[in-house]
Amino acid sequence: MLKQEIEDGQASLADPQFRADVLTGLVLAPRAIPARWFYDRRGSELFEAITDLPEYYPTRTEIDILAACSDALAARVPAGAAVVEFGSGSSTKTPALLRAAKPAAYVPIDISGDFLRESAATVARAFPDIAVAPLEGDFMRPLKLPAAVADMPKLGFFPGSTIGNMGAAGAVDLLRSMRASLGEGALLLIGIDRIKSPDVLVPAYDDAAGVTAAFNLNLLERINRELGGTIPVDAFRHRALWNDDRARIEMHLEATRDVAFAVDGRPFAMAAGETIHTENSHKYGPRDARLLLRAGGWTPVEEWTDTGDNFALILAEAQAERRAP
Image (cartoon, rainbow, N blue to C red; front, side, top):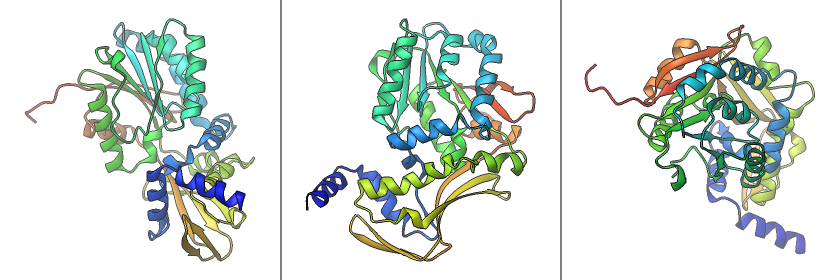
């Protein structure tokens, strides 16, 4: 009885958008749940573990590029700027950027509040001369930045090729939202993962140690915990595959047997082999990436890559709109 009361209480406190996205996604054909719901505290911790895996090249490659382009970047960022990081996580790459840009303020934005505050405190201790103002929220929606940075020049930071988690239309909408939040004249430093061999891509999302599998399956654990779910997690397995037609890695949760379960009191059933699509990670060629940014209202002004051209950091500016073609 007590256990049920606790579970009912947790379900009542769940994010209403999380509940809506899960219930809607489980009746779609094919079934799909947005990837942003991976990031409860446990999911955030698992993702940080993923970034240290030998198969997962983006994080270390991006950090190397940041180190190599720091002087050029410093020359571009105006004095007294505020760095606004969208989806900051543990802020792993942030120190390299802050050392290069020397901003007056840093605004990390993340959906996982506890994780955000801990990471922000770590940055504040490491950079006592920079004002740190964490902002809890879903950067996929319009967000009002803290009043303290309103009049500062802005440098948006969107590392990790997170833009690849969205389809083209969603990515353009997000870039336009970022432009509106940061304002005309702002800069945006964005990570873009390149198209490359599936022999490199697939292991990055299906590592030998099974950390990415745990990350994917944790979504089901979160549904059970926060939405009163009865999903038999052991009846699902992680799958990662390369979709060449759409130039993306896809992550799915596949039922290994016929299952029936409830979420928020609503019944669902899945046959063996049926999947829940949980994430896309789109990859871009150089021209594709620049076109995407322009469609989102950003003009690329500089670009840096690693020696193998596996990953790119692009600096773009929110320039005044041209009325003529």
